[in-house]
Length: 430
Ligand code: NDP
Ligand code: HSE
Image (tube, rainbow, N blue to C red; front, side, top):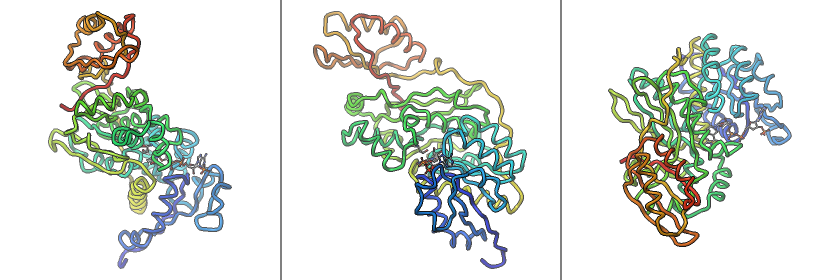
């Protein structure tokens, strides 16, 4: 690079798992091209892990490895911190300590930001430092930058999409190859897509954390994980997937953040989408997100939502942005997040797929249909399957209030002819 003075940026990476390893490799590979394009000479000087003995292969090489992450965040020899440990503690203390020591932080940790984002963004802004988090939502898809920069002035109405790679991988494998839920989850873990505790993926919490972050960024709203209503994919059976196929639909886990006149609604739940819907064809660990804005109309972003390399790519983009800002003594904050009313999901309307296990005896259908009618849930179609102990009735309702669907299910549970309420999945995208 001619004319421009080279700035050395010494990076401390906290965590050397799927993402940390991929990041160290990517920075090592891309050091020269980045230097020639940006005049930034990036080097990972220290990596902190929980158990350095597990990483003895790194001991003789550069970077240095340590079991004491606190030493790294306060070190005078480190300029930028990358947090890819995950979880709330000690990640929160470490991020705070790094910011208090005057270092910008890049994190991929959605759980931390969904639970403590507003507090941490305030600390970063007060100190004029970056706290960047592109990798925390939708892995390698540059959604945060698009929302924060390209769409900064856009009145955004809704952001909706598939933001968890693990559950999308599981649903794709179950649907396309008939693989069991357990085997598909084990594959997603082996490929480095899942959280260290994968229950966060399958129960919807990971997608809910991402939805909360999306709402903070898209609407400037101060909210957190506790404001998001979420359901995961653990109740979805091979039978539900087969039914969806016969019905010309695909089951996807959706995250939705939307602005209504007086409130913001943020939710995560599985949905049956018609096969012609663009999100229905998003397979494997891919993520895709629709942004609906008043001026821009509809936008869709698509890419790898999980895995070491795509996530490392997003982290590296943030490292370069933070390093540039550091050299110019500036930062890119989220600004003031405003408190906002949260929309109650009970008032939302959707069509539903409802699967009931029932006694195989006369009068069952009439008794069940009467309960739907009593609560104002109108039935669009009905299929009876199986005989004897296998008897099931599958309903598709017309668009109905969530509150009414819940009261219908509560009353159905009390009928002696209803043995079990199976899955309830929203039918959307028509
Ligand atoms: P891993 O579980 O693979 O790695 C976690 C790393 O953190 C390990 O190296 C572990 O050390 C280290 N660690 C744990 N506790 C401490 C501690 N107290 N001090 C120092 N180091 C510690 O996680 P991932 O790499 O998969 O994920 C990291 C983060 O990135 C998470 O927040 C995750 O949600 C997020 N993310 C992950 C994506 C993915 O596809 N995997 C995609 C997007 C975001 P040790 O090796 O000694 O056990
Ligand atoms: N476990 C997460 C997922 C990693 O599967 O989407 C990416 O955030």
